[in-house]
Each structure stands twice: as C-alpha cells, then as structure tokens.
Length: 172
Image (cartoon, rainbow, N blue to C red; front, side):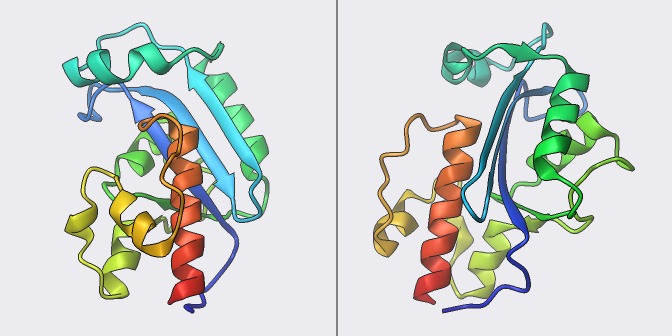
C-alpha cells in the first residue's frame, strides 16, 4: 500500500476539439474528488474539430453547454479554496487546456499537477502499456470493473482514473 503525500486531490479529465492546444478548445470537463464527489460540464464551442473528435466524441456530447466563463466559475466552485492537486492521465493536455480556460495565473488547482503515468512509472509499471489513456489492462489486474460507460467521456474517465488510483493505492 503506498501512501500519497496528500489526499487533497481531484481526478481530472477533459475532452477537447483538437490535440493541438494552439487551435483546440475544451469541450467537456470531468472531475472527481477522493471522496467521490463529481463534477461534469460541457463547454460551448463553435469552431473547427479534428477528424477524430468528429468521429468519436461529438455524438456523445449531449449536456447543456456552458460558456467558457460559466464553465470556469462552476469548476472553481467545485474545486474550492483548498487548491487540490490535479491528478490526470499523463499526456499534459488536460493541464494545458485548463490553463487556457482559467488563464495560467488563475487556475484553482495546486500549481503542481500530478500525472498518473509518472505514478505508474515510479511504482515500477511501464506507463507505455497504458497508452491512449486506457488503463483497462491495469484495472483488470487490480480487480477494478472496466465497464465505465463511454470511453472519452470526461466524467467517466475521471471516475475510472480514481478507481484505478484507489485500487493501486490499496494494493501497493
């Protein structure tokens, strides 16, 4: 069993219009606290989408859309004043797109964000085995149910990340 530095974490995932942060924008945000409290919102966007997003993601976005300002305010209320650590999958885009939403100086999370791939690496797991943000193999090894709803739904992915993290924490 590993003991993290802090339990003041929020498991976090986003979906965006393009992998290129210079042209892409947030489309949805999912967040889950260690205690299991959940946040989800979809962000209004009327620009261009990558082909992958058109084929795999747009049809899943069905919630009412918030403006970028409304999304930032709602997420800030969810995060609260404690400046929790953001735990995200590992490619860094979640952090970059969130900084775009809040502005780098106004992001509500602790300034150091924690990527799950680095946690895996430090525990002796090869994070490349879990590429494309899919921890299904690890979840199976840890006994975490892998029927998580729709892959590439920000909230489902954040909940799955939390479940894998907690199982790994209890096992190691």
